[in-house]
Length: 156
Image (cartoon, rainbow, N blue to C red; front, side, top):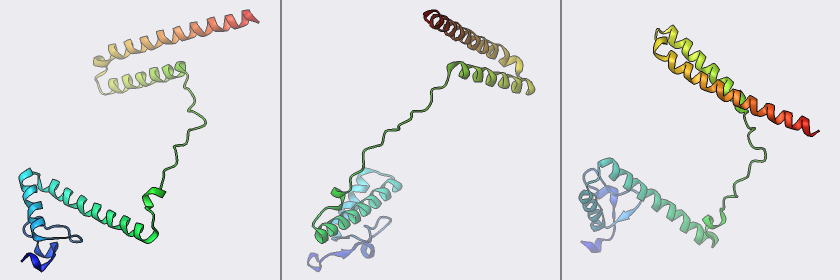
């Protein structure tokens, strides 16, 4: 029986997992593949994924070898990705003071929304504490900027 040559996998495949249609395997190879998959206790999805991947890899390898025979060179060797280009102008730095103003506004809007839903009491203390913290940070930034400005004016 082995002298009959290779058998088209799709015509002789049994059960749920016939071998890929494009590749030809001997019946023994197909049986071995099925047995290995059954032993590994893979789900049907995992088995299908493996078979699809094998089929794609074989097709890719076929095309690569055909290209080598036709041109004498491996197409993959010629394809090189250019190095990534560095961005010339970095994103502008956001002013921390402006960020704090936006954050306070967002918290005020959130508190207003919660009060409209009747849950303002639950969030009022937390939100006011956060706003107070942001205001203190803004005061520190303002104080630091004032000191820097007075030093700059004194040195001129």
